[in-house]
Image (cartoon, rainbow, N blue to C red):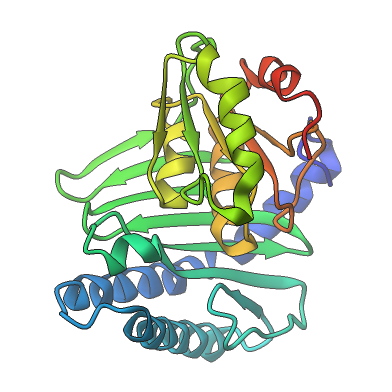
Length: 278
């Protein structure tokens, strides 16, 4: 099943999968909200060095594994911490990012969140991205669109990408911009930056993807993607009407390292500027 025009068979398959996914949503919500409270409660701890954060990741992973396997023992788990990954025995897999924005957390910057995606036989079916400090959550269900929730005021909005051109657009770069592991991102900046209205770096994948999905930015580029970081965002942006490929314009999956994420309108222009970069 591709991510293009849906056939009748696709729609039937999505409907059946949707029932399976819906049964898992209360568990996903419990994990996100409970782990979010853990992040907030420990944020002001003076021992926020990386060793402490690793222990917090272990605790969130343990919470996630316990709750998933307690209700759905056949499901698989892929976690960013990598401590308790488990193979799926039924084609369903949870992809969990226990802390998105680790370096922000360590430095006392409250741009931090948690993410969960669920795949069915390799297809992304559900995504949820939660920022506990802002009390904001973005969710997407395959074939049903993307929704933004603001728990501070009870606001709920359908997410939709913008219709801005690149000249009017905001470009977002991965937080590792300029590091040795992301040297290509500097070249990306050189090629795209002068053509856009502005640039930003947030250091948190949740913000990167939701900025595109909500129409507040038009381009996001990363050359150091990890599955747990990008799986929820790929589905969110697609369900909001955007486009996601690699830097050569090929279709991507959650294992792709290079991602170009746009509102769709500017995608081909950006690909042309990148000239098939790998």
